[in-house]
Amino acid sequence: MAVTVVVGAQWGDEGKGKVTDILAERADVVVRYQGGNNAGHTVVVGGEEYKLHLIPSGILHESTICIMGDGTVIDPECFATEHDGLRERGTSCDNLRVSGNAHVIMPYHRLLDALQEQSRGAGSIGTTKRGIGPVYTDKTARKPMPVQCWDLLDKDVLTERVEGQLAEKNTILQGVYGADPLSVDAVVDEVWQYAATIGDHICDTREIVFEMMDAGAEIVLEGAQGTFLDLDYGTYPYVTSSHPVAGGACLGTGIGPTDIDEVIIISKAYSTRVGAGPFPTELKDPTGDLIRERGQEYGTTTGRPRRCGWLDGVALRTSARINSATSVALMLTDVLDAFDTISVCTEYEIDGRRYRYMPAGTEMLERAVPVYEQVPGWGRNLEAVSTWDDLPQATKDYVAFIEQVAGVPVCLVSVGPGREQSIRRGSLC
Figure (cartoon, rainbow, N blue to C red):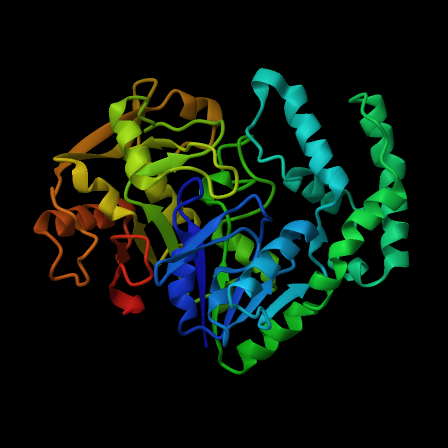
């Protein structure tokens, strides 16, 4: 049995979906362990593009069990839309399982998320307004009892949960935001129309995971977002409401830390970020614009243009330590084909002091000045390259430099969006 965790090394959008899809070829189980439909994973197979927001990226391998774990939060409408869309394209979803303990994103969560973000004005933190923060808040608050997936199996229980929630939520909607109250029946009816679709997949997923572990199965644990959007280890408060780091895989699946064999952190060959928050290597110039256009850096979920910059090696080195990474998958390397010289941030300078690891304080990070090292570009298109030996020497040198910066080996070099455009090394071979 081998358990592999796939973690975003940066601020999300690194290409985790492609790596998970590759690992799923030989995996028996893929478990999504946190987050909701504020994430977007893109998988390209045979020229066809699949944009997944909730369902694990292994779903295209129908012999692989795909699980939405205890730590996830699920919007029933989004789930049903994604599920039905996959079925229309020939993917059965018969291999999909949903934890009954996963919490449900309700209409009032989305509404509160939007109102809260609007009320922050210039101090907004850049949420996707998908209700993620409010549903995790309810999960932590515990009372009145929030809605879990189990409750979607019984309309009377769902109604009872919504009544308790709206007794509190309507007071907030009216008293704090001046919004109209929500009707219990309207909320229940809106959610119930999707309950049958998700209900067919709800079960005790921990039992499945434990049984598969006992049977020696290959298991992949898939995170959403990235290390520096983690609630504790990210650039707080510009973070998500869950734990994308490798430790979150234990929390969201029930698999203990000593059962994890590999942790693959996923990094772009450059850096991007969506929303507000510190981003030391951001390029607000034509170079940044060129990276954005070549990489099509627009959010899978929101469509927002991503902030772009050179690779932040300080963040990558820090991510490798936080996640106990065993290797790095280097994505979108082909985006850098156009550059004669490539810069990599290897240190920060803050108030006259040099830092090799990202400081914990967000205010300090806002003052960070990146210290760059330049390496030669390769000046040729990589999309048709299929083996390590055929890569230009300058590309190999860049990969070696990234390994030196991160302190762990590179296990995959992605040279295009397709599943087949992946040069595997080490344990992925």
